Structure formats: C-alpha cells, structure tokens
Image (cartoon, rainbow, N blue to C red; front, side):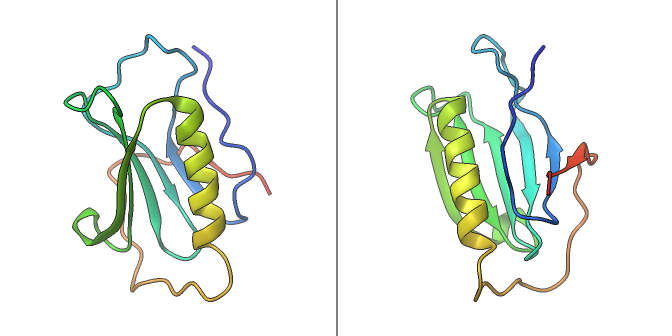
Length: 115
C-alpha cells in the first residue's frame, strides 16, 4: 500500500506513523501520525470514526496530549497534508518557544523528515 509523502518539513522534524494513499483504508482509533517539530511541539493526526464529516483530527500539543492548544477535524488526506505542512511551517518559525522537555511517543519512529 502506498504511503502519503508529507513533503518538505522543517529540518530536525521527526515523523512517526504513516498515512496511506488509499481512500478505502480504515485506520484504527486514535493515533495515526505524529510530527514532532524541532521546537518540541507535536502535531498529532488521529482517526475519529465518530466524526464522519471530518474523521482526521489534528491536534498540536507541547509535552502531552492534554496540553493541546490547537484541535480541529479535516475530511481527507489532501487536507491533512496541507494542514500538517502549514502548522509545521508556522510552529517552527522564529519566535516560537518550545515548552519544557520532550516526551517519549508511544509510536515508534518511522523516519526523519527530509532536509
């Protein structure tokens, strides 16, 4: 099954998990993808089957999920990629202060973002 390329993300970004380029793919509940930015912030992409109009839930948090400050749903993979790229660029720019220490993910690292 072909995976979705997230494109250019800021240097030092760590990506865990994958998105599949298959509209029929059913993700398990919860975490699908985590994008840990060099600022220490994490963009979390989850699957919410109770929200069929926007089953992909994007959340940004500092040290733990409960500390999230951005949380919204999108409908399809193309929008997920657009929003992950937008958030990564905005949250990795100058003036962004990371919060505290980094936390361990429950998902194994899959690859580093290309530089």
